Amino acid sequence: MSFRQSCGCSWNEQLAYKVGKASAELCSARGIAFAFAPAARIKLDPYSDAISEDGCLSASISGAYASGAKESGMAVC
Image 1 (cartoon, one colour):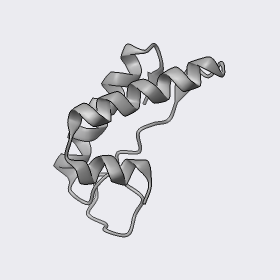
Image 2 (image 1 turned 30 degrees about the horizontal axis):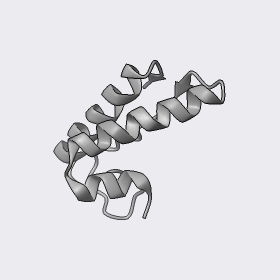
Image 3 (image 1 turned 90 degrees about the vertical axis):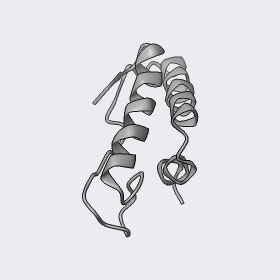
Image 4 (image 1 turned 135 degrees about the horizontal axis):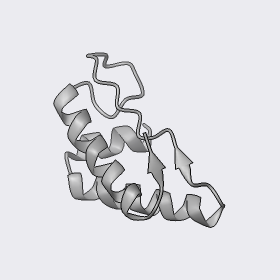
C-alpha cells in the first residue's frame, strides 16, 4: 500500500496536510522545488495506485496534501 492509499484509508485531511508539508520540506532540503503530486485520479478503479477509489475522497485528501506542500514553498500540480 502506498502512502497515498494510506492517507486515503485514514479519511484524515489533517494527516494528508502534514504529509504534504513534510514531503515538501524533504524535497526542499534536496533542492527540489516542484512536484507532480499528489496523483489525484478520480475515476472509479479499485486497482489503481490512487488515493481512493472514491472521487470525492480523493479530491479532499489531494487538496489537503497540496495545501500543506504549498505552505512549505513547494509548487505542486
